[in-house]
Amino acid sequence: MARTLEMLPHAVAFCAQFMQLRRWCALTRARAFRFWNAMSPDPNTLPTTEKRAPVTGAGMLLGVRKVSVLMPGVIVFAVAFGAAASAKGLSFLETMLMSALVYGGVSQLVAMEIWRPEWSWGAIAGLAVVTATVNARMVLQGAALQPWLAQYPKTLNAFHLFFFTDANWLIGTRYQAEGGRDLGVLVGAGIALWAVWVIATGGGYMLGALVSDPRRYGIDLVMPIFFAAMIVPLWRGRRGAVPWVVAGLVALVTAKLVDGYAFIIVGSLAGAVTGAFRDDAA
Image (cartoon, rainbow, N blue to C red):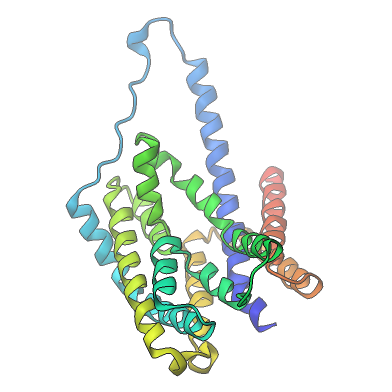
C-alpha cells in the first residue's frame, strides 16, 4: 500500500498530461483544416516556415535559476538512490554510470527494488517492462514538447532530450505557456539537474548504510510530493478534477489486484478516457 501511495501521483499526473496532449492534438488538427481550406495557388500567400526556438546562454542560466528551488529534493532523492545501489552490491562505478547514462530518476529506484545478484533473460525483460511502465509518462511529456523542438534536427534533439526530466519539463512548459521561446531554459535546467543528480548519487553511495532505508528519513516522500506539485499547474477547474479522481481510484484498485506498476498506466488511461468523454459531451 505504501508503494502505491508513493506512485499514485504518477498516474494522476500522467492522466492530466494525456488530456493536455489530447487538447493539443485537437487544436493542431483544427489549425491544419483551416490551413488547408485557406490554401491558394499563389505561393506568395502561403505562410512562411516558423523559425526555430533559440537556445541562448541567458536562457540556460534562467533555466538553472528556475530549477534551483527543486535542487534540495533532487539531492535527497539521488542520495537515496546511491545508498540503495550500495546496499544492493553495485560498485561505485556501476552506480555512477547508471545515474550518468540512464538518468532515470524514479525508475532507477524502482530498478533497485527488484535488483538481484544474478540475472536471467526473463528477469532482464521484467525489469525493462517495469521501468518502461514507470517512464511511460515521458511519451506524453515529450509529445507536448514537439512544437518547441520541431525545427531542430533529430541528432540535436537527441542531445536536448537526454537531459529531459519531469522537473525541467514542468519548468519549460510553464515558461513556454507564459510566452517564452528560448529552448535554453529547458536545456539549462536539465543539465543542472543532471550534474546535481550524478554528484549526489556519489555522495549517497559513500554514505551507504546511513540512509539505506529511505523511509526512515522520509526520503520516500520526495517523488510523491514532487508529482503532486507538478499536477497543480495542470489544474483546469473542478470539472477537470473528475478524471483525476477516476485515475486515482482505478490506480488504487489495480494496485490491489495486479502486482507490479501496471496501475500507473491503467489508472492514467482510465482517467484520460473519462476526460475525453466529458470533453466530447461538453
